[in-house]
Length: 346
Image (cartoon, rainbow, N blue to C red; front, side, top):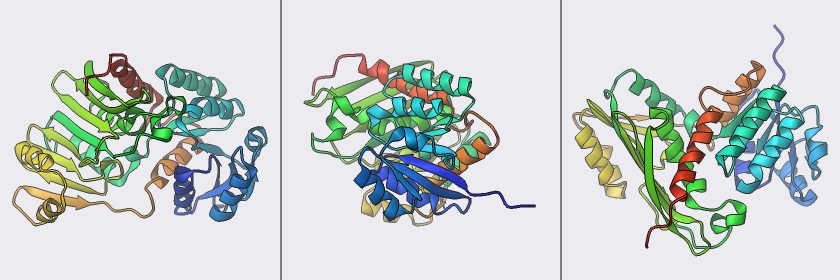
């Protein structure tokens, strides 16, 4: 049988995440970077030379007309994602759209409708869902390893000075868009969409959120999540079940180590202790009722979402069951609901 030709990717954007994605494509023998596009010709050409793209474009229409591009990865600032996704879809190009997929849930509905009408694939690049450790955790939880899930807790926080794109409302800044999508998406991945929700947020000087908390309510479970630019957090995720618990070790958005506990209380206590150096050393020592699994991977971890997208596209699918657009929209609806309220007093 003839070997299938390498899958051709095009990238819009030349920033850090675009570089990570391009580098991780190099870990997939069945993928190749065909082209890159930037409004700056100089940046496009520099990126292409550095990361091996065959062609560099500064004109988006010419880029989208390139027949060798089988899918487009959109890696631009947050406020550009939805419009560029719609442009690619209109050109007949499948799209993998960096998170957040858009700045409003209504824009996700427009992307989903356009993709369905045009018959092309569209997915948010919430790459954490595709990591080996996350797949392993979801599989084992579904098999009942810790019993029915009763609580999910997580905080994702990295301190940033109040400047630059993270705090610019015109660029889609704010902790919820940049960080909160990770714990929210993983909570929905494990528990589905909530029946009720609440939360609060603290405003930065620019008006965006510098810290946001979320509470997702389910018939028999709750998810308590937070994110922020105001501190460096432990950046772990806890899943408590009726018969045990699981900690996604830091940083959970690119988790490579899972720690399983036979008792949910011990898992919660370990989570509350944080992830300091001494704690990490002690947690690696063997103890009854605790098992650690390491699921390491090379690169940045973006290759797994690319692999899933390629498989879906070549199968003629317009969406991915592991990261459906309706869950991307649900995450944004949660953020919209919490941000609709006034900011809490500092």
